[in-house]
Amino acid sequence: NANANANVNAINQGSWGVTQVKRDRIHETAGSADDHRGILSIAVEFLFGPTPIWPGPSDVEKWNLIERFILSRENGITLSDLVPFIDNPPPIMEDQGSTLPSHTVSGCLHILAHFNGVPISSSRFAFPEIVAERENGNFDNHQNSAESGNSEMRWESILFENQSGFSSSNGRTLGTAPKPPEYLHEKYHVLTKLSRKEFGQCICLNLFNIIGILLLQNAISKEGSMLEIKNTTAFAFVSGIFSLLSFYAKFFFCLPLARLIFVITVNFGIKQRNEKRHGIAKVMAG
Image 1 (cartoon, one colour):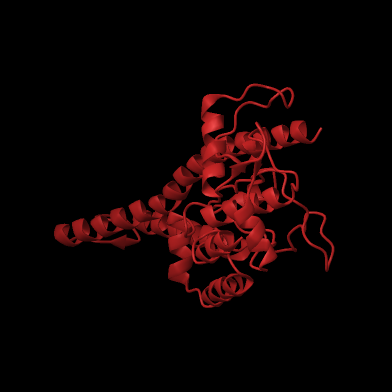
Image 2: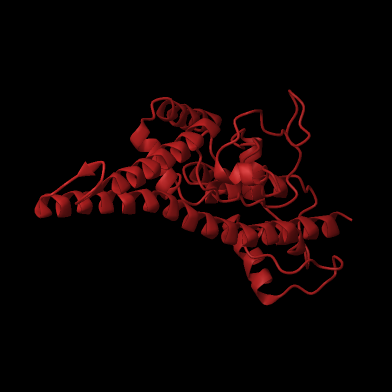
């Protein structure tokens, strides 16, 4: 028991979980940064996407999710129980007794090694260190992004952030602990995390930019135009400037469009993995 407590102290200094205080500080920092965004910051995100690029869940959130799942099984777990939580799930199993592929077994063993699981029978494992962590009151039992989020991909949620309501509580009522997680849920990539208004402002701004450039280009020529430029050098200089502005205006649309194609392609793979984990979790539960 003393060794287990010593290991718990070492774990608490590592990356197994995130305390509520740290979580609140992260949210406060992010919120204060969003409240003071300028037009340049909005335009940069429209062009290059949100930061961080990878939506998560983070490694800390994954381990915390798996830790909660392990602690919900008082009689220990088997390798098959961990399949819905690995990064690369196999095809949906027909029953709990199906033979696991080698890469699936490797992913499950990685989880066992991370939490120092010890065998209690030929097929079941226990985790005394994280049990001791819970008994010492250092266990973080909060939901995180590894188990929440929409399973459907909607255009609105991909293009900009939906700020019209509150997120789902996954069947949780006020004052009660969250339900034990069933499987790992990867978050979908998004084009931006701008609000609907900010996203619309970027579209309108560039549309006006393109229309203005086209009108000015048509209005300027050497002879017979509204803004006639007779000097050859001046005409070449002005034409070069408008060509550069025209390239910028097209780039402002082409780069987000290319990123959108990438986001849709990557999200398709994430959707398949989430559906596999969900299907395997149903088989294991049923």
